[in-house]
Length: 318
Ligand SMILES: [Zn+2]
Image 1 (cartoon, helix red, strand yellow):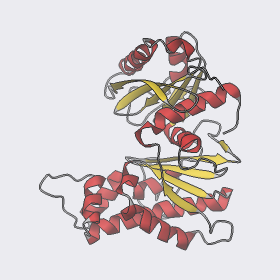
Image 2: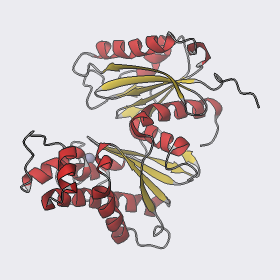
Image 3: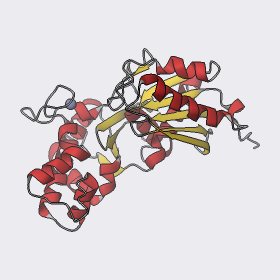
């Protein structure tokens, strides 16, 4: 059957604290055109918006632009999809910033769909990745922060403001450390890359000659068998497992997909994660829950933003 290669094209934006990526994505999930700018995260809001407009201008220079009828945005959060505004923690110039309206104006009035980055990653994994074919899934991004999103009854469920599934701020330690969100004992406070690395340092882990104290450096030590590094990953895995088990008990997911930089550590995270899940997820209806790595990688944000735009436009299910 003949298919017009430009059919179903959408424009996608992935907005984070370090870069603003854009793409034209076709209905098969292929990225046809790319553009990117660094995020001027310390500048005022209009300067950040100018970088978004520059990315859109690069996309608009493609002959395929005319076929891209809608725009999807995945943004660092918090977002408020009901109002079309974003307030990314790492972009202080944007607070309740009317991003949807500004992007609509910059793209000649195209319809714009906004989701948080955790929901975008979830949409990407459900469309093209490890959650494909699963009607009920939790996807997690474990990185500088911990985010996530839910697939229920075959559809990504962003919730009223686009933040549903934000597992990073589910408390798993009743008397735990205060979290940046104002709560305490959150999954993110224990499992994020910076907290994982800080805990290793507090317990006596020391970086190599390069002085790298990132979670990736702790992961390298863990792979080499360093017990303090391994213990820090074990603790992070425990917190993630508790959050995943709670989610499974509430809404009966059958798979948890874990992506983000910290998940790149591989088995030093996934082995204790599966072990802890066995301890926390014990009821008959959650016992078969599996945990797998995400597969859409660094394009998850763009592909998820594209998926969100496509589904908003057609009303189609997941
Ligand atoms: Zn929190």
